[in-house]
Length: 184
Image 1 (cartoon, rainbow, N blue to C red):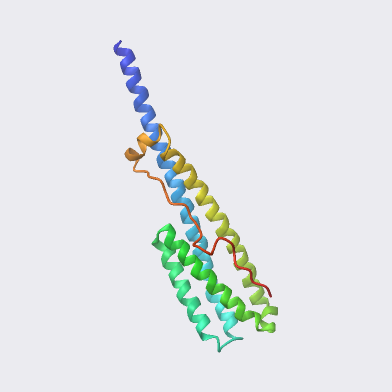
Image 2 (image 1 turned 180 degrees about the vertical axis):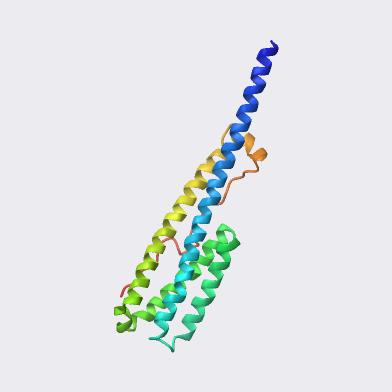
């Protein structure tokens, strides 16, 4: 009888360790996925000054647009370094609008659209937007896995011990569910 009790206690202890480690690994995966969004948002924010400087040479009188881009870039960089998921999404929406405004200014200058530098920056921004989209989806997949564990039996009994809780999904702010369209 003693051996049975010891075997049951050992099994419970081993499962507790397994549950703790699994929950922590999945939580770390979600943190890492959020970091991937931050990396891509930072990359995009770093591309913005190059885009602005390229467009500035053609459009010196569009000062307000460039100031708005600078503010949006600073907000996105700040949110990427330590904001909540909602703050990151909101900062991203403001930066999206600022990029659209710069591209709209660029549309008025045919020579600029033909510039190799401008075209290269457009390709880089497009690539970055795709990477941001992938990073968002990867994060939401990781959060879905985590939230499924945290809210189902038996994992929910161990989430408090592991210090793991459900996370917020990365959702686009109202009006930002579809990407804006810019045509040249």
